[in-house]
Length: 405
Image (cartoon, rainbow, N blue to C red; front, side):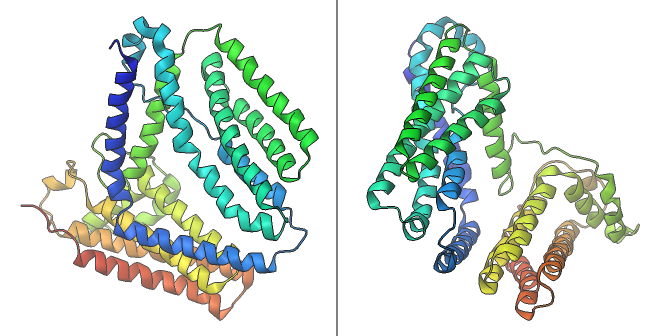
């Protein structure tokens, strides 16, 4: 392990292979369809809103706020492993080469998001705020520079503070980034210069403090493990990830749902599947998140046809992901010890999907009635959601892989 560049290269290759291994399941055919529909609906809504947006809309404030949040998200990707706190100690003086490669990858992999936000904001800035192409170019260059600054600053802060109170650093960077972006967009260059000076001094201060303490291996290893675990948990919605163990929670307040499965032998699998859904964080919070997005879309998307497309895409994604997650899994279950027909589990999963999708549609319906009253066009939203859920359920059963003998 004398060459840390070689160590990084091997780990980076493994990391990329790991991403490709699971991304092929995440960005599969049905998810690609959802993404296309969601992007299309969002794009149509955005373009229609631009035609009616008020001239006094605070475009600079909104764009600066959103982009500053995205730039400030700069957690370093170190690819460190648990044993590095021991094996890297003899090479601590040479660690800079490894960390330089890590921070370079962090920059190139994370700068894409704020740049995408810039591309989306160009019509708003040019049509509403009157920004010129030259000012947009300045904005583009500033994003690159500030993203590099943000990554370096967060890294220095985490090193100097051993990862304590990271939210304070994030808040400080976001405020400085917001101020800098706003003054840049509004061409107030004198205040912009003052902000840049403060940013440079802030980075230098943490660099000096970093030099006084040893490298906090344990903190950066924990950060890397948590980052990869988030990815694995997300991938676990789409395929089985062997080293992921889903967390469970009692949720006593949802015990009323168990009345949907009366105490009879024919309801054994439905009760077990229902209990799994209610108590498993991954499954339950996935449904909660997608339902919340559907409710928000139904309320805030001003065009009924776009709202229908958006909520239907989310209903489609809910059915696909939950059915696959609840139906798959090679782990041992207690019900395998009992004389229960093997096919009843899949029927129980389908029954549960129908129930929770009906609840999802009811939530959307209630919010629509409260917010807009009885409008026939809007009433189509929950109806189409139920239809899409049922059609998706039936089609997924047709193309389901047969169980291996």
